[in-house]
Length: 371
Image 1 (tube, rainbow, N blue to C red):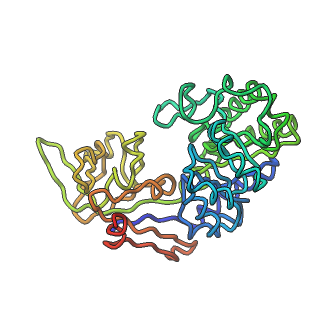
Image 2 (cartoon, rainbow, N blue to C red; image 1 turned 30 degrees about the vertical axis):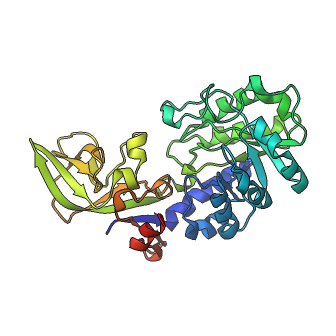
Image 3 (cartoon, rainbow, N blue to C red; image 1 turned 120 degrees about the vertical axis):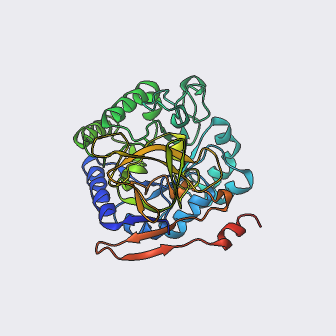
């Protein structure tokens, strides 16, 4: 039975580091639900973070109902019939464009909301176009030439998001770009949201530089609340996906392990990004100590549902378990039930190794999606 595991002790270790950075930097760090929305873990996360951010009404409702704090909300576009409800429950409310800011002005002004605008500083270290939000001709946020010389009436904040699993040096560069382009707005704002991508829990990340950079920003604009909303940082290396080899196929010398998981359904970033997840006890490269090569095949009928060769120390047989590491972030939130493939269980494992919460999926979950 395939199973996602989230390990509470590893999660708490990350959250402690994040909370220390927030305190030392005098900034607000919140959880981005687009990276992780397994709400049985929210009570743990809420011990360390001040809130969470949503990109849809459903995410906002999940935060309201299970995190217990008003959500920060930003969406690339709002659906008119949902906006009233979004505005009712949002704390900070951010628009993607000046046109939407004005379209819904009567609503957010009447509700007294703290309203922000996403801007695009046209800087990002992200090299994969699919994951780069800062293209100058892109759809996410207003570029400098579009902005009036003075902020629109009632605007309280700016939001930028251009990083993805990035370094402290990238954050420093982003801040300098924001100051250079939008400094005249920052003087009149109440808050600045620097988005996600600040991978401060990764080994080797320069947290001292991040703290120094954020403290300098706070000193330059002491009136601003500075907000970070990473997703991966909180969940980095805190979970895995365990699966079973169901069959071994060989054609013209290429051996393929057929697994009870699907890459397109359960690990889509491995095909979209793409990236090579680590497998416990295996190598992504051929080495003398890992002489046995196998392609990994998913269980859907999509022809491209596979990963190229991994290398093992000994032959892999039907019934063997494979463990994909670092599968807590951007996995369960992006899964699908394409082809009706079984969805892995989701488990929270406490510090003693006991499974304390489990979400299992069956036919009713698949059926209910269509009717």
